[in-house]
Amino acid sequence: MPTVTFPLRKKGHLRQSGSKSLTKTCLDSPASPIRGRLSILRRVIATDSHYSDTRLTTTGQRVVVYLILTTVSLINFISYAPLELRAHEKAWGDALNYYAMSEHTGAQVDNPFALRMLSPWLVHMGGKISGLALDTVWVGFTFVITLACTVVFFEFCRRQLKLQTFTSALAAIALGCTFWYGPYAFSNPYLVDPLNNLLYLVALWLLLRRKLVWFTVVVILGAINKETTLLLAPLYPLLTWTRTRSLRDRQVLAGIVAVLIAAVAYIAFRLWAQSLIGGTYGFGSGQANKGLLSNIYFALSSNKRGEHAALFDTFHFFWILFAYGLYHQYRKHGPRNELLIAGGWLILCCLAGRMVATDTQRVFVMLAPLVIALVAITLDNQRTNARQLLTGILVFLYLALNLQFVPNETKFLVEIIGLGLFALLIIPRFRVLPTRDRPENSGDDHFISHRGTLDHPIAPHRR
Image 1 (cartoon, rainbow, N blue to C red):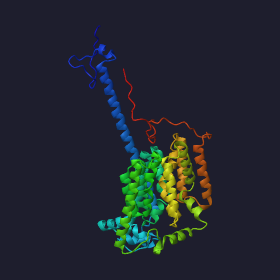
Image 2: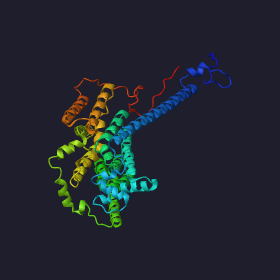
Image 3: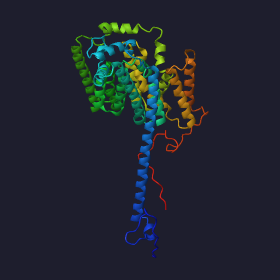
Image 4: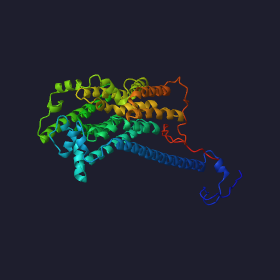
């Protein structure tokens, strides 16, 4: 067979060692080792380029979203936070007790506030180390923790729930602007609620990732901040049991042991705290150390004829979207779905909490991460520009209701419009907007999440 030689190419191309030529015979052979190496080299270059572009794109998205969340939180902070000198003198409710506890660890204040020591202690130590006034430390602490809630929730939606960056960012903004989650905390920044919200969110993420040890640690820390966090502990063995249907399963037994460890740790903390404070506080008792039954009677006697409005005011029309999200999870995954079970359990926990507390919105806002997460899951398949714009308008209406852009006379109308937009997005027979999804890997839209496999595309072979 005749041999045909090729001239040298530009610098960077492969050269045949020793003869400065490549034979067509070798290149034409399907089993040629040179051809195989060229193919492998092209694959490596294409894969490295893809990974590099993906890392840069993901990092850029995160930076943009973090800046947006910081800006939104800062605007809410400026709008609601009391920034004048000695602002704590205008505080109200249980904030007065927490401020006193930050002045002196172990202060004898009313039950059950006296045993919620973590946030006041952190503020006390922050003021002691920095030398700043306690008002300043409380306000800064509340801002940082509330901002952290939105950032962690964005990562939760993006990494755990695998939602688009666009949807995750909207969900995090909605969480930070939910009045009883963010703005209310800024308006009364001497509460344990922000840290409690953050620990709830982290515990929920660890629960879904099945990280039992860290989940137990977070629950114990949360109980030191506010005892209601203990209600999350039984959720781990419950979710494990629904997956295995066996009480003898190792994970179920480990979850039960973790519940007992959390309970024992909290009891030990209560005994230590009472010895430090120098008082006796009955478990489940209310202010003035009244008994549990008296506390329940007092809580259920408050807010008469206003409970429905207060409950609806917590999440507005997102309640309906949340209910649809639960129904959607049931239809798609069945009754053993983790989000469905967690939602039902937390609703029961909030109902139990309302029996001993009078602030309905502050009790039920603990559901906020789960409510907004299920809403985000339901809205995540909106891929065209028109449908994403409609999703953004839907979230804007929710923000307008929470941030009080809407006069009381027109609130009901805005709620109806929000539900109408949601129906337009999810009901298939509405064809006003295009429903065809854009390609998942289109380069012109940086808010489309990667939903492929771990096998990355290979650059086409050029002959």
